[in-house]
Image (tube, one colour):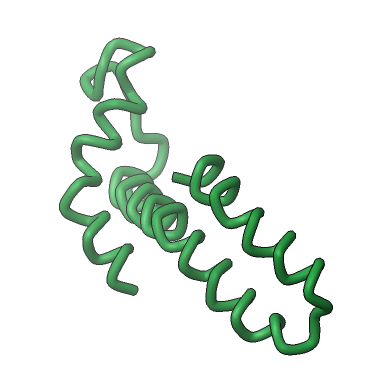
Length: 88
């Protein structure tokens, strides 16, 4: 929730960056009345999820770790930097 709230402040820059290949926001057309709001909200939610995903992975790991063998625990911790690299 906090990552999504923080992403709302950066969403105008994110949407402008995503629209840059087509010539900017001026060249985009809204097909439905609510589409600009929908795009803004979806971009903010996805950005918040992408920022929060490493934390979600780590919390899931902490929940599962007591049931893992020592080698599996090490492999799970070794995967954490990959999650940070691929999703942020």
